[in-house]
Length: 228
Image (tube, rainbow, N blue to C red):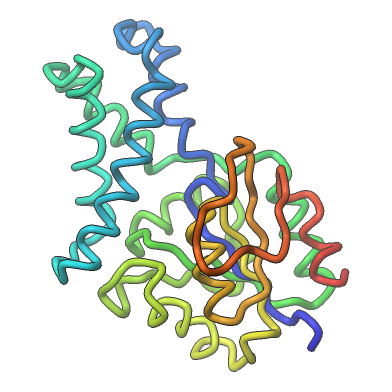
């Protein structure tokens, strides 16, 4: 069937999660981060994801903001920056102001102009996602922003992917699901979505029972994949 609905993961897919550490490192007040910002950003993101998986399999759900803070605290400690309360607060504040990757606004506009439905499906809490959408200025090209908080478990649980059909009334094979996380794209493939993995870092394919249908270096070609 033709694609009718394009659904995107948020963090790392539409929004640049490294931007908070990169911006803070450029500020004179946080010079200690200057040579460590990439290390902090990578540790932060990895722990953030790991904690969602651990909470999902142990039935210990909490919202993504708590997971984000826990991941940052671990990243700052392992980088030797855990005593800097001002830096911690600045990084958390910046996480609410993440910018979209450069190609995102035009890509989403092309999908909407072609009459496709567009949405975010994210682990993020509703308030966090609203902050990111408003900061990036892409609210007018999204039909909805779907959060795992409505089902109380993180991706890749199938109940999260169920939210798309419940919201848009579409069949699974009408959905193009796009994520920067290989495991998320794989999980969505197993669920029945057509998937695209945005592999900006050129990482190897995850060893899982399913693989994404498409592997991209950025989001520029998404309209073409959706048949626009």
